Length: 301
Image 1 (spheres, helix red, strand yellow):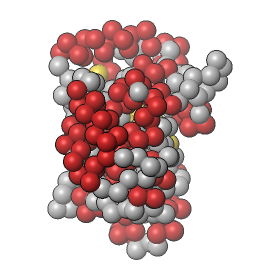
Image 2 (image 1 turned 180 degrees about the horizontal axis):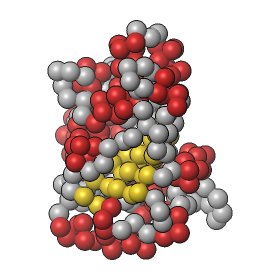
Image 3 (image 1 turned 60 degrees about the vertical axis):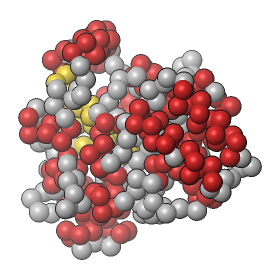
């Protein structure tokens, strides 16, 4: 059972253990599928020539993520989001989340949310999750684990899981189990899914307040938290700013931790300098990966 008010903030690195790609790999995967996409049926009157031009430019533009590329070609945002949704949908394999594969830190979270061997711990849990990811792998894992361990119906599991806020600030691939977690999907459904996601430049910054309802909810949860944990998070300045929270005054007295696995020493030094004005100290950063964070850095209690 998790009794300390805790916010877990997820970036792309948080779900790589269940086969989702980081920004650079997503670019590579999209570009490697060019010929397959060009031969497939396309919605919205898009043509294979448009896909060819889009992915060729993406492959040569030198960007580390497709979001960064789309900032330079906003007129192609809808096509880009469709291609993102198509690629992400291909990674939806529910068996990949469970044994004999390694569910990683998802399994730890599930067991910590229980009260002993009772799902009642979900109702009293003080854990909230804010994710910048479109994928639904964490909530699917938690939902299906509840069904399997306690022989719940899908509706009962969804009701139990609803006590743990999971906020997708940039949208998601759809509500589960209403939209199945599987790779097969017709183009009409795929187009609808793509419209539910928002890339960074689509989230506008108002002169006052929050850019969307999800960031406003996130701000409230952060103010209530005693502990903030960043998992696989890239600390894009826009994403941090839109919380309207991270200042020395707000971070004082809160436990803040962040994984930095895979980052080189120079990158970590740069991150330390960027986070210092926000009140996030260098001691918050550690080299652990998400999957061993709770055994090496801090436990959820």
